[in-house]
Length: 246
Image 1 (cartoon, rainbow, N blue to C red):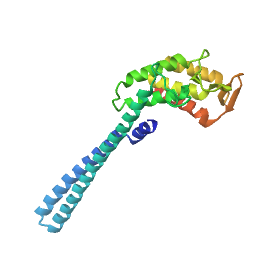
Image 2: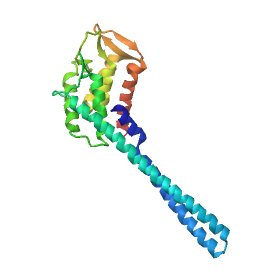
Image 3: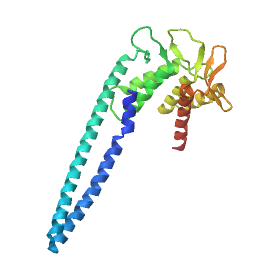
Image 4: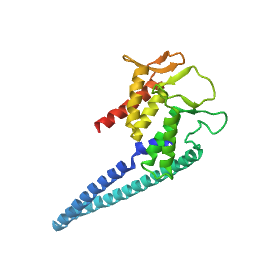
């Protein structure tokens, strides 16, 4: 679903429709001006100018037909994207467990981790803003409650797993807390956002350096690793800056 949500956001059909509407308005003005030019040419008994302006009008009519087709393409593209999102949503909804969680995979010896659970919910929230998804609000509510009840640790950071399928030397991963902070910002849970932001800075940030992991004996590891997970953290912080500005 994430790719289709991003595709819809990047495509932005409303902006594309507005561009076409603006072009239609300019085309209408040009058409009216051209008709006036024909009248003046006829009055001046200038057949060459009359034919030239009539040819221009035919070109404008063709331009109008092109805009109509572009409008149809946008509608078709939106329809197909929404159909894909609805299909993917139906799978996500059906795979949600009674407690609100999702297994990483419905097959095999799977696990339930924090950041993938947050990513699922973030995309459900974004998708539900531009397409009606059956019972989506309840799905989001149940999933978010599960995350808050099962992934928040005593020190205010996000746990990595609520269900694990293998042991790990890593106790806390910045990626989990960053995605949970980003999700909380989307839901308007400002208290959790503030707590996570404060605890991430206390635990993972040292001066100008940001660490990505804390192991089971408390050592900070993977300093300034951008992909995992400094960039997700900075992205979450940028959402907070955007909220403050708005």
